[in-house]
Length: 72
Image 1 (cartoon, rainbow, N blue to C red):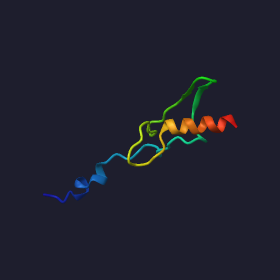
Image 2: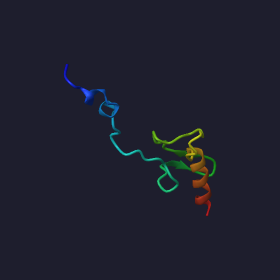
Image 3: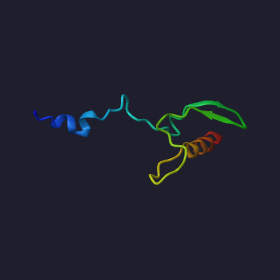
């Protein structure tokens, strides 16, 4: 048998992301529509909606921050 240590390594067969993962921020939030009663944003695949133990900012928190900045 030949030595196939490169095939057994997870780093060898794990897919790498096609593009860097970019999470939304207040500065790059993609607002599709906004008026006095509603705001529609484009959710990126990397944005989280529900908080978890990571402590990352959720999309809901970003929209709240955006609306507070927009009022000024």
